[in-house]
Length: 327
Image: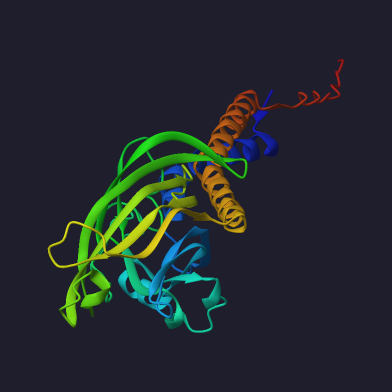
């Protein structure tokens, strides 16, 4: 009797071993390479709310007006490839109804250009590639991957410094759950601006270097747990002018109790976060577990079949004619 390994058993064994090798490869190599900040980003987020702003035409602060903040983020792919980091150019404009749609962002109440450079894996700031200004903190336009239930240092570009955001549980945005972080900024001097003395109650002085002050009554960010994408943002900014050395606000330049992502922006951010999160889950959890489980089963079955072999029917005995010679 002879035993042979069947072709099927060898195929099953080979497939099982391949899947067992593939499972840790997906976890340790493929998924970490997918978990990197994109360089070809091109997104626009819009905040709206009601507030006050200084009308230069009327030379006074007007109230109960619609405030719109538009932020455009575009990745510089060429510089990103050269440096190995994520290089993002950020344009932020603050408008009221009369300056929208903004054909020229210089007509806005406020317009800033920034260049944000981060490590694609850790999200930490990297000081290169003509970064402007010099950033700090752990989060700004996004949080690190695999967001933790702890406080984070978030960069506030208006403050020009970091703000501690505390973890406040979970919150659903458009039916999608994320981690909620909150913080605030106490009134802080952020710079000076030359203005007519009359504007800050210095009537006898033609021009003064007024102090610029900034506060934020409520920063609220909802972040996707896996990708670090911000799916909703709300802030309560206040910018004022004070006479030099004064402890009292003289002019309100901009104030809103709450400006927040529009519904359209929320839906778009949730859509992007959900797609990226599902992809990372597939590479880091679903596919490896499936590959490991299937590979184990196929390997066991293949080994059993190889050991048992394929039984072949015994060869028929040859019958030889014997001739007897009688003498």
